[in-house]
Image (cartoon, each protein chain N blue to C red):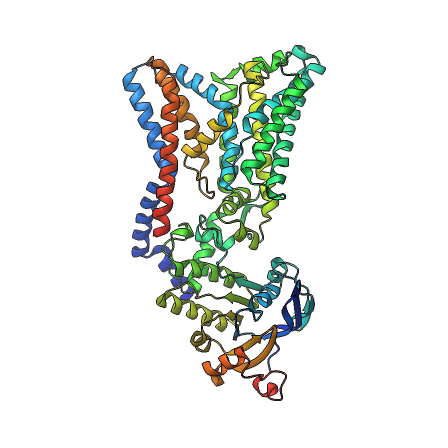
Length: 258
Length: 346
C-alpha cells in the first residue's frame, strides 16, 4: 500500500456556534485523483481552505509524507509542495500569462534591485504551457483577453509548475463550456500522471466518476464514505452525501480503503 | 523530445506568429498611450501651422516644461496610486507642506545665505515629510480600510492645516539664494534644472514601473488585490509604499516649487490634485486600476500645458484651455470604458 502524501486526521473547525468540520479525515495518494464531494454545507470548502493553508483548524493533524506539519498560511502550504487552483483562479487579469505564472515568484536579472528577468519568465511560461499541452497564442497578452478555458489553463499551469506533491482544484469546471471542460479534465489526468496527488472538489457527479480514482464523501463535517471510483455509481455517491448510505465508521470502511 | 517541439511550435509556428502580429496590432490600438500620443502630435502640428515659427520653439518648450515640471513629478506618484485602483487628492497640499518644512529649516539655519549642506539637508527634510505623510495615508488606506478618496481627502485637510499653522497663514521668507539660483532658475546645457529633474524622475520611475517587482506588484494589486494576496504578495505593505512614494514625489515637487518661485506659495495649489489626476487619466491610466504607463502620464501632463501655450500664442482667451482639457479628460475616460467593454467581451 502506498504511503499517503497528504493525510488529514480529526480536523475540527467552528465558526462561532456553527460546526463546519467535526473531526473530518481526508487522505490523498500520489498519482491519484481524489474527489472530495458533499452537499452544500458539508464542510468541503472549509476543509479545502484548511488544507491549502488559508484557514487554521481548531484541532486535528495534517501529515505531509507522513510527517506532521503546521499550515498557517498559503505560503506554508506552498513550501510543502501544495498548490491550489482557486475557483476564481486568482489571476491578475491585466497582467499577461507569463507574469501571472510567476506572480509572487518572479525571476530576476538583478535580485538586489528586484529587476525582473522578463525573457526568462516568458520562456518558462511557454515551456510550462507546452508541457500541459496548452496552446496559448501569446503569453504576453493580458489574461483578461483570453477565453475562460485558457484562463483556467493559466491557473492550472501555474499550480503544476510549482506543485511537487498536491494540487487542489476547487470546482475547476464550474464556469466552463463543454469543450473547455474536457480540456480541464485532460489537464487533471496529465497532472496525476506526473505523480502528483490531485484533490478535486466538484458538484458534478458524472465528472467526478469520469476523472477520479477515489472519492471521499463529507457529510455534516465528517468523512462518511470512501469509494474506489470504479466501484462507485452516482446513486451510491448521492446516497452517501445525503446520509442514506454510510460506510465510514462502519465495518466495511476497511474494504473500501486502498 | 516532445516538450521542446511543443515549445518550438509555440514560439515559431507560422500560424502562431501571424496571430501574434494581429494581437500586437490590436493591442497597440487598444493601448491608452497610443491615442494620447496621437493627440499630442495633432496638437503640435495644429499649433505649429497656426503660429509658424512661434509655437515650435525652444522658448515655448522651456516655458511649458518648466510650468509642467512639478505637476509631472506629482503625476508620477499619482500614476502608481491610480494603478492600484486608488487616488491621491493630497498631492498639491503635501507639495506645500514639504516646502514649508524645508523653508522652516532654512529660516533657522542661515535663511537666504544658507550653505549648500543646509540646503541639501532642508530638501531631504521636505522629502521625508512628504514620504511620511504619504505613508500615513497609505496606512489609512491599507490597514484601516478607509477608501483612498476619503483617506487622502482627510490627508489634504491635515496637510493644509499643518502648513497654515506652521506659517501662520503667510508665505515664509528666506528661501536660500543658492537654492533659487541652482534648482530654481539655473540650467544645465541650456535646459532648466527643474525640467531635468522632472524628466529624470519620469525616466527612473518609468523604469521601476516597467522592469521591477515593485511595478509588477503595483499592476497586480490594481488588477485584483485578492489574487495578489493569495499568491503571496503583501498587499497592505505594498499599498503603504505606493502612497509613501506619492508623498515623496509631492515632496520633491515641493522643493522644486520652493526653488522656482522662491516662496512657499501656500495658497496657490488647491487644484493641483485635479491637474495631476487629469494628466494621469489623459495618459491612458484606468481609474479602475491595473492599466496605465509612465510614458502616457508624461504625455498626459504636457497636453493641457501645450494647449495653454498654443492658445496663448494665438491670443485666444486662455480659459478655453480649461474647457478643452475638460473635454479631453472626458474623452479619455470614455475611451477607457469602451476599451474595457471591448476587451471583456473578447
